[in-house]
Image (cartoon, rainbow, N blue to C red; front, side):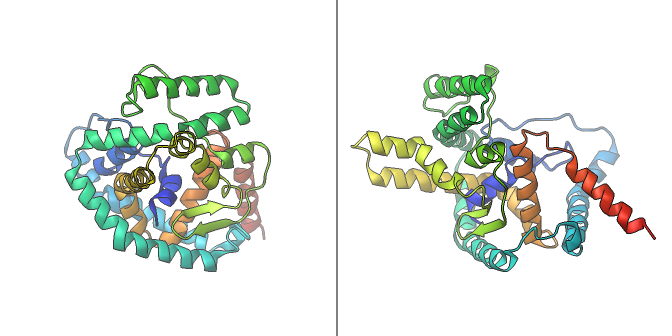
Length: 300
């Protein structure tokens, strides 16, 4: 899976205190934040739990996803393009193993963590114009003003976005794109689809890809500043992909260890997109449907 696909999928994976430091810190670096330290539990119990945590989590995730895979009635027609999607997913993983993984490992070995964090901040800032536009399109006027202020602060005081000064000024980072805007406008999600080299998406999320490219400062700079060398744009784009893949190395390993990596990625992506669409407060209708399904299964 290419880095853009994993970016959309694993952006908001919830990490508990018991998560391995490599996974937790990689997630925060991906968001341009410093790795967060949490006070460890005391006693020998913590050591035993921390050693077993990866195996326990993987077992739970695999059992849950295996249950979803073997019970299609619970999610009818959730993946009508599964045959094509699996082929595209296998192709993406082959490309990742052959190129992105070795290059990102070499990059991570020679690049200090503070430098990686600044690079992540820089590219986040380049894409933040698209966030601001979509916030206003969704009617979030107050948040739009805050995001515009965040962009201005990080672009100036943060030296082109290399340093996330705005977060220290209570101007938090938000994640918005055209797919979320279309969801706010009531556009149906459509089928799940895996794009070669680009990763997971849905029909509704597809316009986010060209829209994100069009609103990036790299694209806008190339349009309005004629003396920008195309080689510089290509080099920065390649650095963005490699840096993103390096930040997601722990999440990719977890995905690859799942009972069915394809289903693991699909469910993680769809749940995360639903979470973002409703700003972290999805409706409870899915839980009602689950209650009805369980009641029907228990009825004589």
